[in-house]
Image (cartoon, rainbow, N blue to C red; front, side):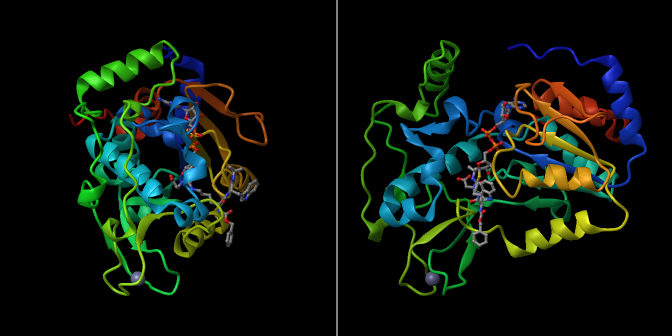
Length: 314
Ligand code: BV8
Ligand code: ZN
């Protein structure tokens, strides 16, 4: 779907407001990384091998079938490592360097903002990252940064001879999706073997539990340090001038709740989304902006007055 041209009048009024904004938030969702080739959670991307992504992202699913959940996360690590940050990731990183009062609240665990060298103290990873592993036991504090792919040999993505990450398979998947078929490239008819627990990532500290992905699962609280950083920013007396809501369906809490909290602190709301239906839960208000289109093209355009031209780093 071609990106509709950006409404000039809306763009000018947004640029004027951004240019005089000192304290700005951004809430990031899977749509930010869509044009980097990573599936979102809703629609075609919501299914991994006919498993509902949200049901796999729970402590219960991991306890019931750690092999299946580890295949899911190993696949997402593999896809994220194959992907590249897009101009929107770089534009947000540049805005952070240019505007000290800018904070990005990311729901994404794909590591692409970090790879776009987004200043770490202006990037709050609300739901963790695929590239941190931690002990599955609450009583063990072991954690490590890990980019190994596959995370353990036993989790090598079964290809049955077809390399699901090959351009041929991607073309096949893209063609299917254009026809509205729900083909996930990893759906190439290759059963996933159930891996015995001893061959899954083990905690080297307590040697008694598995390692799990360092992401926040449904029913788990967000990292206390991140919650504090966000609350400190929102609760500051100086108020908030603007919140930019990028590529999110804003249905998962507490992340989605930050839109209204920012509004209450005086922020105007700007939504960037491919789909105009994904409005903030509390609906639209006077002065809001909606820019419909691909985040990778719209975000650099929106931030131009502060960051200038973003050269896509290919
Ligand atoms: C907790 C990590 C309590 C794992 C994730 C209040 C009301 C209702 C429910 C709750 C509530 N409070 C808590 C809950 C329960 C639950 C929740 O919100 N449930 C939902 C489903 C209703 N929340 C929790 O469980 C949270 N924990 O509350 O703990 C607690 C407190 C103390 C002590 C103990 C417990 C934890 C939630 C975090 C879960 N983890 N991710 C993983 O990734 O595997 S959530 C995960 O799903 C993502 O991180 C993200 O948050 C969400 C997906 O949403 P999006 O990123 O927005 O993606 P989506 O596909 O939905 O949308 C994409 C959008 O992009 C679309 O709008 C599309 O149009 C657009 N788009 C597509 N292409 C483009 C584009 N836009 C621009 N350009 C494009 N090219
Ligand atoms: Zn341990």
